[in-house]
Length: 273
Image 1 (cartoon, rainbow, N blue to C red):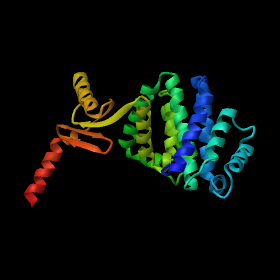
Image 2 (image 1 turned 90 degrees about the vertical axis):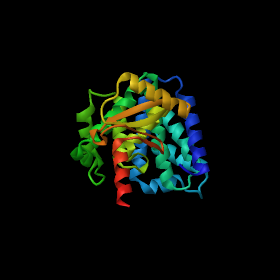
Image 3 (image 1 turned 120 degrees about the horizontal axis):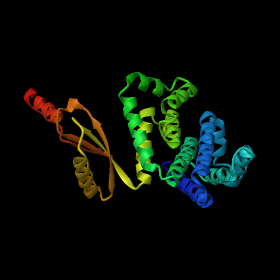
């Protein structure tokens, strides 16, 4: 969603969706989110439909009417109205419509979790699952295999998480399986962690240490990073003995690497010259 026209179309749809969902419960928002994500799935598999719904030679109202006819009786009025608003806008390329629809679904899922005061738990569950995946090569290969059907991978995720994680977490992992925003599975998980944190108005800091931090150490590090970035920081800590000691912190594109491993590698390079 890079172009100005696409951003405006998305903003209009968000505004319409927000106006129509302010009184909905968490469960009702989850239903709307599932419908939005189902439409995203339809668009993903129908490139001709994406082109028809973003055809710049057709007036926005015509595209909107076409979309309404396709969804008549198949989705709630809230979902239809939001997506009709979206389709009426302009897109620089057909795939932008898919990305925008998918993002609307994810944002609505997060709104559902916020209504149920579960955002922090969803954020932590997504990160913990991403760690499990990255630390289990066979599982990572299975879930990241874009050449394999989605259905068995979705079932595997359900078997692993159902009853052990929030329903919103499970649904977001399923979104990641589809390649959220055109990303790979593991990159999709990380992006969803960051969007969940952003909904809580927090920055995500990925921290790598050789041994677990104590509560006081975590609090001190979070406070220092919050002072630097001017907002609350959500620490995502990974324990990796291979770094030997010290700490590595990544916030967005900023990397602070104070690990002993980095110093040793730097020393090796210096001696090699």
